[in-house]
Structures are given as C-alpha cells and as structure tokens.
Image (tube, rainbow, N blue to C red; front, side, top):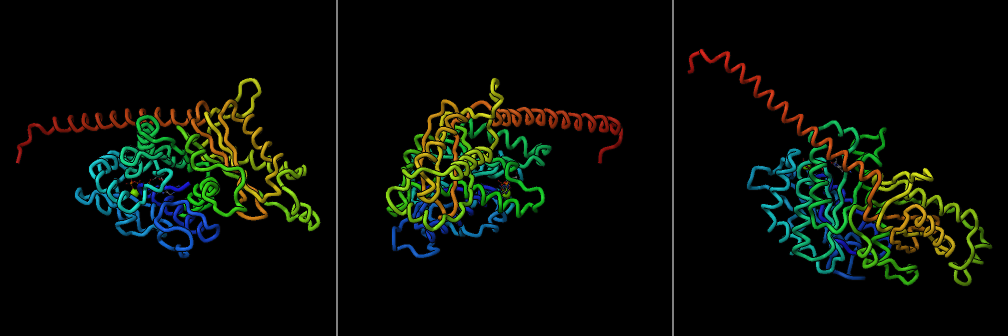
Length: 426
Ligand SMILES: Nc1nc2c(ncn2[C@@H]2O[C@H](COP(=O)(O)OP(=O)(O)OP(=O)(O)O)[C@@H](O)[C@H]2O)c(=O)[nH]1
Ligand SMILES: [Mg+2]
C-alpha cells in the first residue's frame, strides 16, 4: 500500500519521520516502496529523496521540527503554519482550538503543498498523524483529514496517539484529548482511525526522549509488513495476497494494530533438504512450529496499540468486539504452512467473534523470524470504548472545575475591589 503521510505537531511529525526512516530501509533492503514518489525501479538510488516524496510535517512551531532527521525542512516537505498570527516558532502552546483555527485559515497552503509535491494520484490512501494531548496536532488533525478527503477523494486514515497515564491529571492534556477524539472519531471524514496509546508501550525506566524514540519505532514497525505485502514485486515474495484494495475494504472506524515476532531456531540440514522439494505450504508443521505461531497470534492481540478487549460474561475470556479483523502471517515459506495459516484464522475467529476476516502471508523479514500482524477495525464494546468515555467525562469535570475556579477568582477580586472603592482614583 502506498501512502501520503502528513504528521501534525511534534508527536505527529516525529512519527512521520520514523515512517520516512522505514521507507528508506524498505527500499534499500527489500526494494519495496510504501510512500508515493515519481521514480520507479532501478532509477532510484540508495537514500534517494524521492523515496519519501509523499511525507510531510506540519507545525506551528519551527522548534518542534528541529528534531526531524529524515523529513527535510524545505517547503516541499515542511508546512509551517501561523506565520501571520505570531505563532511562528512557538506552537499552539497546548491550545488545540488555535491548532484547528490555523489549519482552517491556511487550508490553501496545506492542500496546495501536498498537491504540488505529494504525488497524491499514485497513493492508495492518505495517513494523517497527531498526538491528542498537545495543541497543534490535536487541533489540526480533524480539519486536515476533512480537507484532504474533500480535495483528493481517496481513503484518508487518521492516527491518534493518546497521552501517557502520567498526563491524566493535567487538565489541558485531558481536555485536548477528549475534544480531539470527539472531532476525529465522531465528526470527521476519516475512513478509519488508528488509535495508539502511549501508555501501552512506555518503559518506566527509560528517559522521555528514549521512550518517544522506542515508541515511535514500535508504532511504525507495526505497519511494516502490512504496507509491504501488496507492494512486493519479487516473485519469491508473493504469498496469499493481501493488497491495498483488501485493506481498504476492511479498514473502517476505530482501529487498533498489533504485531508480534518470534525467532525461529535454525533448521537441521537434512530437513532443509526436504523443505527444498515440493510446495512447503503443504508440508505439515511440527508441534513446536504451531505453538510458536499460536504464541505470536496471542501476543499480537495482547499487544494491540490500544486496549480494546471485553470480558465475555459466560466464559470469562478476553474477547474483541470488532467489525473486521486482518491477520498477516510473515515468515519463511516452511513456517507459513496451510495448517499454521488456518490456525491463525481460527484463533482470530474465536477471539473476534462474528468479525469479517481477511488473512494473508508474507515472506517476512528474515529466514529466522516469524511475525503476526493483527488489525482490528470498526471496534465496538470494550476497553477502548470505556477509555474514550473516561476522557469525555473527565474533560467535562475539568471544564466545570476550570469554570468554577475562574468564577471564584472573579468573585474574590470583586470583594477586594469593593474594599478599595472609597480610595481616590489616579
Ligand atoms: N509517541 C509519541 N508521543 C509524543 C511524541 N512527542 C510528543 N508526544 C505526546 O504528545 C503529547 C504532546 O503533544 P505534542 O505532539 O508535543 O504537541 P503539538 O501537537 O506539537 O502541540 P503544541 O506544541 O501544544 O502546539 C504528549 O502526550 C506526549 O506524550 C513522540 O515523538 N512520540
Ligand atoms: Mg508542539
């Protein structure tokens, strides 16, 4: 699947930057392109800027862009807003209304830049990324999704990154998250919204900078196989097809993604000889292979980008309520046997009851790793629904508290003012 990617604000921009890093890696190592560009095939050099042509970073503050390592700070990749309104260099300072307003005001610049440089006609879809807790990304993401949908008539996906739990007592973070979720989940033209919870991936022992980097790598890494699978041209690489159209048909509504990888021990020589003959997909898998694959499926579900399970009331099992589920098995041919693929399919059928299922295989990253990517779409009842509701409720409480405090301050100053009423005015 080929994307145009727009990262909004600092968090969004950093994640877009990681997608750029991955796009270079994929070209160099697999000759696969996941981002739009002009060139094709052997015309593309290593580190050719054309590989990341369709990636943009948008911000109100230039300061937030200095950390970008792969997206150039040139007008064909960086969209700086708010120059006329004194925002330059400062960001929206956690006021997401300003983020939304600036994006609306400068819609021509945003659409114009992406139209001129993004090669959008060759994209299967557009992905707009932002964190929900700040000002710029949180405010602009819904506005940008809508304008790109209207303008380009392609599938437009949003990716929203929820704050760490340690930010839950910060009024701005909670109110911004709630208003951003409401705008994008309920009132935008996004075809699907990937939800990522920073808290799921945080490592308490690491510094913030390291955490961001690791989390961003992990988020982007989750998309590696699913984006690559339809773009492979090498004959050896084509397994059970799961192309851009298959994904587009299933991706819808609230969406979560999870990935798990397992090392495969080296195979004994004589066995490799057997696998070398015939069609490996029909060779029966060993118990160890099945168990390894089963663990990978369970772990991919357990490591979804946002908690979204519910407890089944009769069995007490953790299940998922979703309209669709995509399972992609990646691994060397002798691991991707029919038995293993149908095991993955039946685990997903059991854990995500009644969902529309799509499955595929991919040769994977190396001959000694298997991986499973799971995407749940159109998620309903469960932890995610509870979490969104929690943000809405808390934001309302904060709003009430903020209004109450501000009324009280006014009152208090009012009584101080009355005390001084008889003093002469200068
Ligand atoms: N995963 C991840 N989260 C980030 C990153 N940078 C910031 N965040 C999260 O995003 C939130 C802060 O939003 P930012 O993205 O910095 O804000 P912004 O969109 O630039 O908005 P303003 O600076 O307020 O104008 C916090 O919840 C951070 O934890 C990042 O690189 N990766
Ligand atoms: Mg910022």
